[in-house]
Amino acid sequence: MYLTRHEEALLAGEEGFGCQRAMELLVALGKIYDADRLIPIVSAHLSGVSYKTMGEGGLLFLKELSGDARVTVPTTLNPAGMDLQRWRGMGVDANFAAKQIEIITCYSHMGVETTCTCTPYVIGNLPGIGEHVAWAESSALSFINSAVGAMTNREGGPGALAAAIVGATPEYGLHLKENRAATIVIEVGDIREIFDLSLLGQAVGPIVGGGIPYFRGIHPELEGMKLLAAAMAASGSVAMFHVEGLTPESDEQVLDGLEAISIGRRELDVAKESLQTADEPELIALGCPHLTVKEVRELAKMLEGKQRVKDVEVWFCTSRSVRDECTKEVEVLERFGKVVCDTCMVVAPIEDQYSVTGTNSAKACNYLPTLCSQKVVCASARELLEGLM
Ligand code: F3S
Image: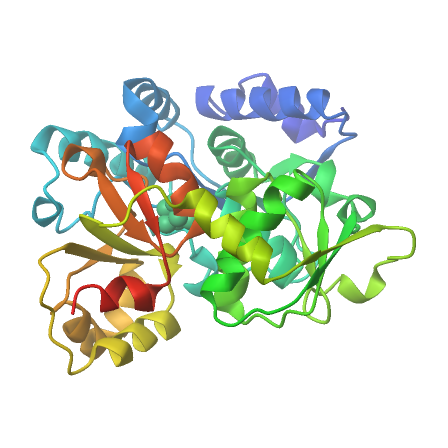
């Protein structure tokens, strides 16, 4: 892989240990994927934040790196393992909290914006069409490839961090226009509500694997795109998709000769059944990916004037920035549960307190059994919340 003089100097350790480690990682990735060179990026988004998923090894690596390395492009952070301000109210233990705060401090020291959200694109980290970025967080990177037309590979946490430090990433995969073409056409019928888009992603992910589906028959807004992106990234390994008339590159696609399949009510029902392993949740958790302002407002409207009867823990997961923008709606939601910031039902240590979680997110339904030892109730937000009244 060709390196500029500056990149050679970073690799030789002339700007410190952290930059050297970052360059070593990028060069290794470039070799694996046969990249010709590094290309500049305009932003990064990092995963690998929760102490639950990083553990002691991850914290040590971060401590080492944060000694002298700093990010050189705007860089945001995925959810942590707890609400950084109200972790006691979540039942998180003090040892976990101390480790989590160490992780956040390391990132902050490196110049990372400690946003702790998986929807950075609604709080200011929004690249433009054709701009190269290095994003981890499978739902967010698929969203910006597909809804925005920015260009990123499915980065892991360390790769995205290395790119953020160097300000560049190896040029391969979805950074190259020719690799962003649709590989299969999905004709969709009978979408009735936004929850169905999550089920659609669940149904399509295993069929397309790492391919690039082209959807016809759906017209999702931002919230629907984020659910679809999240579900397909979890049930398959989709990092990009086209929605006809919506994805910036969708009108350039050549569809003749591609395999086409139809997804309708039957497939959506099968997808839901495949995720459902219980009936009565102990925890209801909404906001995977994190709730937007619009979703917070819709939930508040749904709950306004209602009384809860059942005593089930409820979390509305969102970013601190969205929470701060919705103070009135947050008051309504907090009569039913907790508006939890900086974290989510998957990366928080919920297994210490609950064994059955209800959620409307197919992505969360995929991960809750394996990462959180949960049984799962998969239902729309309305169904889950009506079960409380
Ligand atoms: Fe976000 Fe957690 Fe879901 S990071 S996409 S809310 S699993």
